[in-house]
Image 1 (cartoon, rainbow, N blue to C red):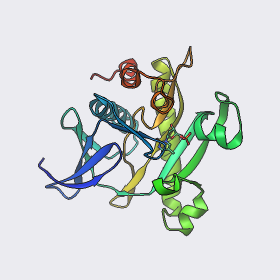
Image 2: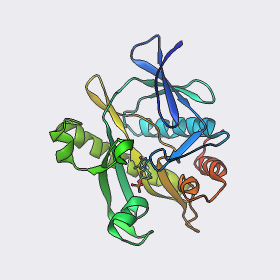
Image 3: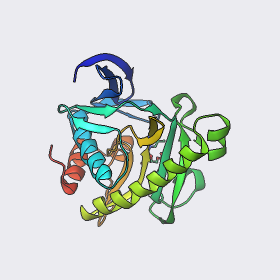
Image 4: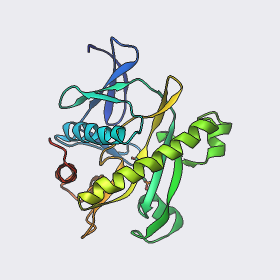
Length: 236
Ligand code: TMP
């Protein structure tokens, strides 16, 4: 597969066209960002770790019947994916209260959410990724009703698969963010699944093992990502 032009450069990944119009190459960089790009650092090995982590998780999700854009690992930091027409929304499921939910509602971090919650955020750094609802999404044309229904159903299906995967590795899947796009009219999981876009706590000690280590300056960020990966069976 021939890598052609840089199509888009995000905060942590760059996207390249290939000689096949339906396929793209994702390059995972070492750049690590938080607070809508206000805090940015390069963390050695992060691109490689997230690329391999994402490949492993996307493969598990595909095995469970969830349509994903992932096609193949190409190198330590590159993956081949289907080219999706991205929906500009982030789907967040929370099993345990943390992060912006705690700040927004003044609830205690760590309480179980039963049933888990589902939230939508608009992808817009300048606005700080505001929370929106399905009516906003439909009225402003970000996503149509049938696609929203599928996004929600797939996001909860991912919860079933990944809660178990991480539980088997002695971890609690606190929350996570997914992004979807359309491929030939079908809703398909895109972007990435890595410790950058979810919260994972050690099930016993509740130690944070995800990007909160970077956001909160706790140190050992990539060492923790590698530890999470090893516990679920990723080989780096
Ligand atoms: P939040 O608590 O900040 O709303 O985040 C919920 C989950 O979604 C958390 O696992 C981090 C993830 N997330 C991202 O990966 N990118 C984002 O831009 C946002 C808002 C959340």
